[in-house]
Image (tube, rainbow, N blue to C red; front, side, top):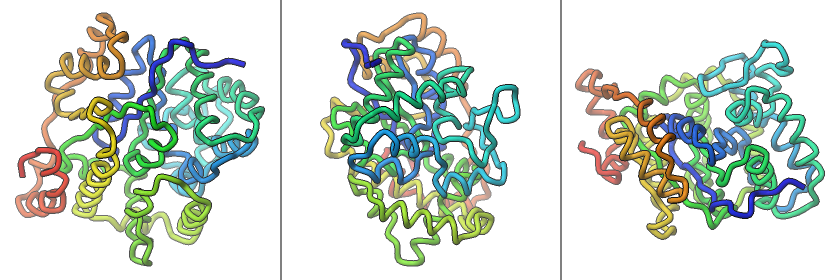
Length: 348
């Protein structure tokens, strides 16, 4: 059995609202020779990622490789967002957007240029596991990948993972957390231009109008089959096109702010030494200092001058998009984001 190296480092969860630069952080960490960068692992699995408390290997393989209704609704029409790394239609690619396994859409192509082969390799690794606590399945899989790629620590990052922060910290209570954030007004604009986020927030707004409290679900530390059922019904019965058309820019601003408040409530239980606040604007304006601090936080033994030289040259500063909005729209968006902006120290 392939297991994690004996000298492996405590795992790291990169948590964010999404559309705030966390993908870049994941990409930069993937260049480190000792970091297993798991990009978009948990969020594409949906509610199924947390629903079964003691699954067997067969169940785990279904969770990892069968699209949940939300993911299928986003992919079935072939609308592929930039984060999706699977190369549909190329030689050796066996899947289409409507049936690609969740772990094959981003996570495995992020690790290797032969993701279909890695997918096949992982099948017996996962399916042969006994019935055991959910966290042990994930630890076994991540340990296998760490050993296969010769890494010392795994770092998982999914866009929108603050929605699952309570559940992730229950699974991995020893984890260190990197909280990536960006000015909520720029984040909201980016969300509004992103197909998956438009569908996601459209669905949240719809089920909330029917009496379902999504925020309460985000704060729960355990998943449930009821959540799976609710997601299944919502995405089977609702029109994805109408969902995507529903949210306004201020809706995205309010959603961003609410997620940051959820994050503060969940992360408030962690000791300060296990948290790092990573402001995306700092990554752009002072990449060397910021990324050096990031890798030291993960573990001082990972400091690597060659890696830091390489990744510090990648980020480029960018102008805030919200400043280009008409005055009335800018004021409305700032008002929607205000609680989160104040929480994170941004000027209103």
